[in-house]
Image (cartoon, rainbow, N blue to C red; front, side, top):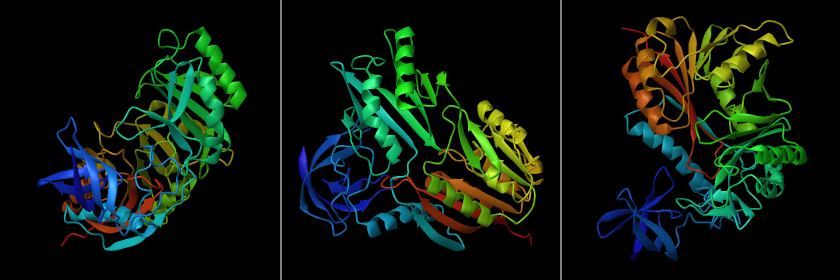
Amino acid sequence: MAGEIRIDELNPKGEGIGTSKRERVFVDRALPGDLIEAKLRRDVDGVLRGDVVRIAEASPHRVEPPCPHYALCGGCTLQHGSEIFYRDWKSSIVREALAAKDLSPKLWRDPVFLPGGGRRRVTFTAEKRDGAVTLGYSRRRQREVVAIDSCLIANPAIMALRPRLAPLLGPMLQEGKPATAFIQTVGGQFEIVITGPVGRHGVPDAAVREAMTTLADELGIDRLSWRANLGDVPDVIIERQPLHARFGPLDVALPPLGFLQPTPAGEAALVAAVLDALPPAGRFADLFAGSGTFTGPMLARGAVDAFENVATTIRALDDAVSDNAEGSLPLKAIRRDLYREPLTRAEAERYDAIVFDPPRAGAEAQVKELATAATPVLVAVSCNPATFARDARTLVDGGYCLDSVQVIDQFTFSHHVELVAAFSKRARA
């Protein structure tokens, strides 16, 4: 099925939206103003989608993608739009999510757009066929793995590993069964976590462990882990030394898959925005604290209670406090599942300000409790404008003012965007 379609808008996922026979169709790599010939298909979810076959009339926003792999690779969403269009679109994702909940901040702070090339967390897909390993990114909505020899978003040190990594994975992988290799680098150290079936029986046997040792030796990998499935706790196979990350006065030994912001520049921008929203001194809580990205810098302002549900992360924060050479730190790391056991109103009111940075699902249960509290300042960090807008609506309905929002884009060329928002409790009449 094919047809000529005029693209009218771009949705938050970066898909062009047009109409075919009175039905909306979603087209990858299309832009508003494009007149395209598209090959149409009905997805399993019933949505009509299209692939560009020919551009009959190009959008005024269309440019030549800078990456030579863009036509095949599924790693980026929007390289074919001009910089001005791209920045307006990224900002509009946040603005429209808030408008849908009838919200607008008192102040829109200047957005921060960061260049590519700094991504220190990258996941490649590896597939072995006829003994040869292809290592790269999967095509969007397809199983095909595209080998890449350059990447505009990844840290160059990671890309330098890629061609040497592919053949070293060969002895571990099962023929025709893809696995992923998550690579993270910080301070010149590297870790790799392999996910998927390996060896003859799907798990690391003696031959696989020997191949992993060879890989770690030849590439200088500090820690190498394996897990069968996403969501499993990684099994550390080799650890010469843990990876260390510095957050203010905290020197944290990261557990396997320990969370870092994708780029150092993005981390710095988010931390600066959070600190700008906090009072100069007080007692603070950091909810969904992770490895301490915000906890560490907040310690310069006062005592911090860091709440996180991952046991290994809590231990890492405790160890960082114990090992701190600069003296005692006013930090208490608390293990708590804030989805099942959110801070109560009484607990929230112990703090002068609370920072919360939940996963993409947002913090619905926690925000319902915070909305009833009188905590003077709340600072939200979000990577999902839709769930942030939902949670912000709850806070505003509970008596908070949405003082400011700042868009921070460290996911260059993707449809993902982050923000930092400041709330203050309105005085009761």
